[in-house]
Length: 370
Image (cartoon, rainbow, N blue to C red):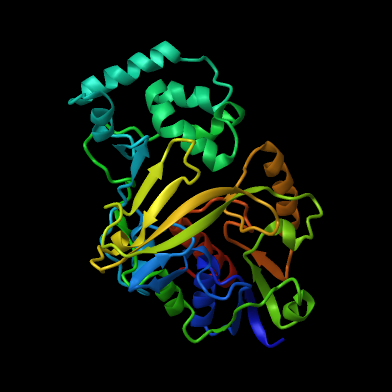
């Protein structure tokens, strides 16, 4: 054995574990099939702008320990996520708040907004909603649903809202204040030098091999290390023996524009179904940029196949049942340990990825972070 740990995946989960293992003297090898580190938080410079290659990533948490942890690797700015929605050329603030209600109905006070929503809820209320459409209308009324939820959701999931289960929208954030901050968390921001810089600092002094496909040389790679941390798709690890886990995928269309400011906001959602992309990201606004050019990214939801990148797990009854079979086998492994959104078939925000990775560190090494 040449290494104590082989870590499959140079994303956030694998990098945190690698850093902590290396810090206590473990010999670590990190591999990734991509040609870069960072997984889906990877950023790169284009025209002096940090481009989020795989969609917008805004770090947010109310856990001071996690906030302090990431700040040891990179300095964060004070970016506040305040997306807006474009529906047929009209602009609405997100999440649903007093600005949104004023834009929709001209109401001024919270009481007026509550009365308007209550009126619509009462008119269209369905006892025991059977699908996402009925659930959403129960929560926020018909108008908000039709303008700001329906089209976006159907694009995102590739199915009509009446064909989606109600549990997808158990609740919707409705705020009766004039506050456009999307997150309620205490800490929020983006690394000033980009997420790739943050991951580089985590992996400093650790051997990393890129463009290395674990499954092409699994036997040889496994033999290099005493233990293996695997962060990829769990069904692929077990050669799909219990079935294929399903996802929604995304494609990204990046464009450099010879103008200073394209849309005036980092993220604009397009909520009508006829527009094929769900949002446009203008990357310079994540870092309050003043560069002479700008970079935008259109984000398109896509049907997932095994040759496409898996993004959003479809945690319905069928897939959850399949995953539980894999989980039972995972729990009985000795050489292999698992973690991250693909291995755990769970959508994770970044701060939760780090919390999960540090929990595994504690389990493996019997220590908490310093």
